[in-house]
Image (cartoon, helix red, strand yellow):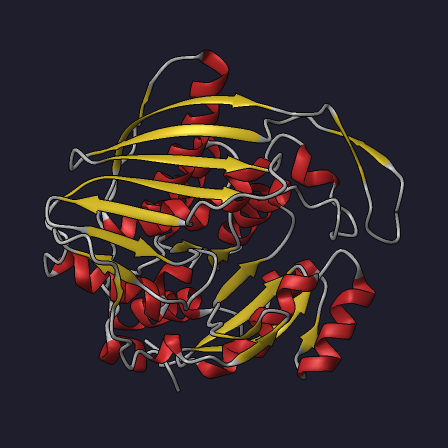
Amino acid sequence: MTKELGVGIIGCGNISTTYFSLAPLFRGIEVRACADINVAAAQARAEEFNVKAQTIDELLANDEIDVVVNLTIPDAHYSVSKRILEAGKHVYSEKPLVLTLEQGEELRRIAQEKNLSVGCAPDTFLGGAHQLARKYVDEGGIGRITSGACYVMGPGMESWHPNPDFFFLPGGGPILDMGPYYIANLINLIGPVKRVGAMTSMANTTRTITSKPRTGEIIEVKTPTTIQALLEFVSGATVTLSASWDVWSHRHANMELYGTEGSLYVPDPNFFGGTVEVSGRNKEIKALEAWEHPFSVENQQHPQGMMANYRTAGLADMAVALIEGRDARCSLERTLHGVDVMTSILKSGEERRFVDLTTTCTQPAALGIEEAKALLR
């Protein structure tokens, strides 16, 4: 097989800039074309990043494109990814892969039938901080993980997003929007989930947009905005996950895992970097010594300062996996299990009962320093 896969991007909104600008860091991929239902958006990105602007039909028929990145809105992920597979291209999607397990199973069926691969973000669990946490867990640093707690909470997106409507519709909400980062990292650190239970609610049935250009518009809320979930893992560990857009401030840590020999404090799974802290039986909390992982290196300026951003690592790993004939870390198997976890949480809240998962997966292979270096050009 070729040593480099041609990449096409469908969806030229804000997130596309990240893929266009970071893809050149990685081997195994080259972005060659882009498309959008808004032709002007595709043309603007094409000019900015020196690629070819095409219609969606043209891109799907382009023989130079091997894998298509699906950056459309969540509600369109399934239909666009299905169309990509039917055109004979591999798919890498932004999260969430799909909005129902049935949609995911249909993508799996088509992919298997056509001998194609499907991958999906998030890939932040490949970051240096989270892989350092994985290394510590694998080496028995906190013993056997028995429990944990995760919190992803804030006031919502209507204060900064120009078109926040879809966040509050079915398929949106904090679990399907932010949950993928946390669940992917929990699978990375603990493994697959066995069953879930949840209570869900919404503080308000409408929201007022305070961002520009639609300041003052009222939008409806049609999906739960506060979710209190309990995840039971196949390993026996139990972890609480609190996700809410009804919280103005809080003092909870992003992710803490508790083991038979100590505790692990994991930085925000939405980012690649951060400080990993641990304690042993002596209860003394200390930072793990930073390691020279390439996906820990701060490479972008953000409002909160310099940060490590290596989004597209999952796409590159998928491409290299195809070239080398190995399992991709952001695989369909793990992504589909994540969808099962998230949709089962929402189902549990609606039906007021525990829900057993129907899918499972393996933990992704760890991405150590040498493995990460091998993904870079």
